[in-house]
Image (cartoon, rainbow, N blue to C red):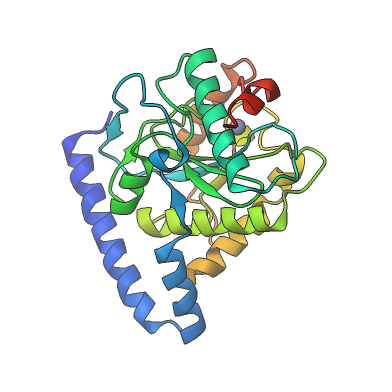
Amino acid sequence: MTSPAQHTRRAVVTGAFALAAGSALSLLPAGRAHAAAAAAAGPEIVSCAGWGARAASEDVVVLANRPERIIVHHTATLNVTDYSQQRAYALARAIQTYHMDAQGWIDTGQHFTVSRGAFVMEGRHNSLAELRTGKRQVRAAHCVGQNTVSIGIENEGTYMTEDPPAAQFSKLADLCAHICTQYGLPASEIYGHRDFNSTSCPGDRLYALLPTLRRQVATRLGTPLTDPESDPIRDLIDDAAAHALSPFPEYVPERLLRRQFR
Ligand SMILES: [Zn+2]
């Protein structure tokens, strides 16, 4: 729970940070200012309407807080070489169908999805509108214990023994940089699903690439990469939440995915 006093303090601190960030931007060398401007603009993100989402089964909950971190996932689907927009949209629909009809969730679990062809799509409804304003987040279902304080990104593929395609990884970095800009997050606040739940997600290889991802996002932001703020109490709570779990059910049946092509 957050008391009104804490809300006020956070609002003041965030306001001060935003002001400082704005001033810092004008002092950056041209190249870094350009990178920061690109991160602010962000990649093209296809909305739920764009890829043909169903309506959520109930209203999604919009929380009053900003997210505190980004969590990276893999979809545990095949590493297809179909990099088309059609495939990307079919994937988004299959994930939504699986999450709603098999898992019983109200909508897609994650906030955003990046296809192997590097298309970025909105996951849960309203995630994109809230990202645009940068003040609030949609309550999600992508990582137990983190669904009210993090943005979840699913990356199409299985990255236990293979790296993601370069274009997909680069688009993931673009998306993370944009999310960091909009919500005032440092690049150090990017994690893998396995940091919080007992799961192999986002795969050994993509997980091993997270330090690279943080560095690339920091470059896009035009800021140095800093260590995450240490919060021992938070770490204990996260640890307890992670160990209370059975493995997170996270995959989309391939036959279901194929059915979503139309
Ligand atoms: Zn995951």
